[in-house]
Image (tube, rainbow, N blue to C red; front, side):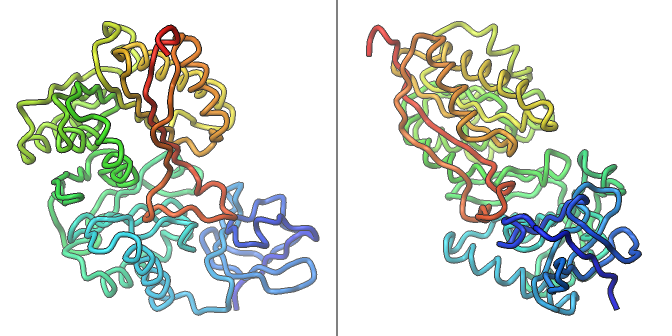
Amino acid sequence: MRARVFLKKDIRKELANGHSWIYANEIETQDQADDGELVDVFSHSNQFLGIGYINSSSLIRVRIISRLRHQIDETFFRSKIERAIRLRRRALPGRRSVRVVFGESDGLPGLIVDKFSDYLVVQISTLGMTMMKEQIIGALVKVLQPKGIYEKTDGSFLEKEGMEETHEWLFRSGPIIIPFEVHGLTFLADLKGQKTGFFLDQVENAQQVAVYFRDSAVLDVFGYTGNFSVHALAAGAKSCEVVDISERALGVARETMRINGFEGRVSFSNRNAFDYLREIEPGSFDAAVVDPPSLVKSRNTVENALRGYKELNLRAVRVLKNGGVLATSSCSQLISRDSWESTLSEAFEDNRTVGVQLLSSSQPPDHPAAVPVKESHYLKFKVFSVTPLTAF
């Protein structure tokens, strides 16, 4: 029999409607349970609400993984993974490289699974999911029959969850740099790079914006391994300059350009993006991409992050020629869309320019946002044509 957790009388609307997180201050009483252990969750009136896993070290005390009295085993995970895959196949038919599981949005909080061609990269961010790793891997093997499964678990959450960093093959083995195709182009997922090795959430946006880069000299800051630049060059950009602080990422970007036959039209700068943008001559580029990593470490740093977004976009606008194109994004979940858009407006105003929106987008279908889980709504992406106020 599982330990029980009883909630206080009035629970959050989001929790009642499908959110999986239960905070410590929402619990009335609970049975003794070890961290990571499965528990049954009940309302104040003793109504069964679901099965979750518990962690006394986390402010999010319980994460629900089922609203029904399922046996939580390999069959359970297989069913959830198969449902997630069906959704991807509807939206991205034929795509062999996708995010297979996106945590809370697929009913599996704490679990990320990216598929790069025939290999899977798993990131587990909670102790409870770590303790069920064997069943998860077994389900992934049966459903997807991959050549190999690699776990790449690292980040600031490890200490809070009582976990250790893990970088290892869990099923068979494979290359550290995995080639895969998207939109007829070849990319490389670097298992020693950031996150799962490649940012699949921006490939659709990169393809959509590329049509505005034809015959342009493009600046790609925070370019990482070249997603936006490869799409831009494939669409007819004259040249791209990829700026990133990681020498390794630029090395992968160079190889990506070589594989796709673009090496003669691209240059690389191993620089801090803020410093680079301060020093570049105004009007040097026809287009600029600003795709920074999350600038928010905690709620206490939101204001600093907003100042950072404003500075990046302010300086990116200055490097553009008259009528240039700015593609800009934020992946900081704690930054609201309204707040981020306000910083963009301020950047245009301070530059005495007008931004005319060409495209507004968010996350692709393999990174679905669940309505009750506001934390799953994280990516913001916009494209503008930028004109001096005096010429508008």
